[in-house]
Length: 239
Image (cartoon, rainbow, N blue to C red; front, side, top):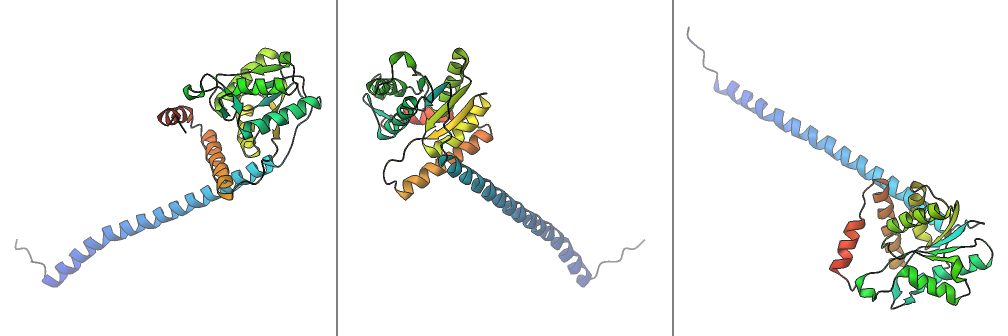
């Protein structure tokens, strides 16, 4: 049986139709990809807006009330002397102790090789002693190196001492994340921000909040970055 050859014009239209289908498919995929990216951006914007507002709201509230202990989260120390930030946290703890808010103060934070054997918890203890807090009413935790480990140590101390309610003292922007970690550790805490330290540069303030927003997000996603932080610190011991 003889075959009928396709006319040149018809063949051209067939080739064109075959080429158009993949193009339409790719265009459809790109269209949905754009919508997916837009939805992701909107979700991320909504999430970080909420986190930002919660951080600021927590930072502005002093929830201190009578408790079993006051826990001071660590910050930098300089060869045995507390940095201005750590000193402000400790001063807040001394004020709470003097007001009779709690009979015990817990200082948290370890140290690194560059610290010449000094620790944030140990320096905090010495500062409290120098400001009238009796030795027997201070517990110095000196092994932890970040917020997550400090909360874990605090939970251990609370269990050993049968401490039911704690006042946690730190920077205002730090407290929202601390509250989440403490809740996960089974701790009942009242957040209490330290007093502000003069004028804070807007860029520095933005960096602190951005750090807390990302750290809180990592915690909610169960992304533990403690080991990464320790590695980075060891790579830059002078930092």
